Length: 124
Image (tube, rainbow, N blue to C red; front, top):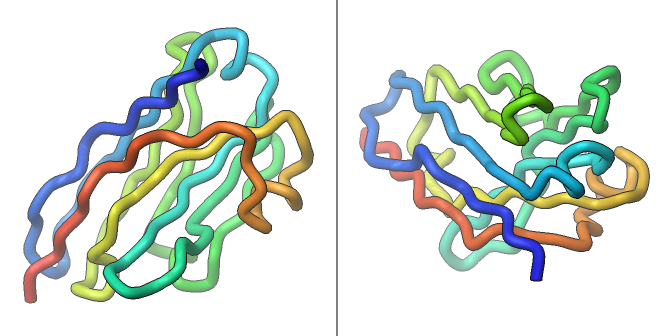
C-alpha cells in the first residue's frame, strides 16, 4: 500500500508560519500530481493547493493565495506547503494527496492516494 507521510504540523500563534512536508515513494512522486487539503472539525475536506509532477502548473484555493506556497523537490521525493500569516481559521488537519491524473482532478479532490494527516492549530 502506498504511503504518503505528512509532517510539520503544530501549534502556532496567529500571524506565524509553518512548513508542512509530504513524503511519498519515488515511483509515485516522480510522475504524480500532488496536492494539499485540509479538514476542520465539522467541515468537509477542502482543497488548499496542488502541483503537477514537474512543478510547471500550480493551483491555489482562494483562501491560500498570497499566504501559502506549494513546492516539490523531486530529488527528495518531498512536497512542501509553506504557510505564512496563519489565521485561526486555518486550523485543521492537513492532508497530502497524489494522483496520476490531471491537476484539475486533484483540485476537485480526487486523489488515488492520501496521507494520514498532520494537525495545524493556530491560536488567536
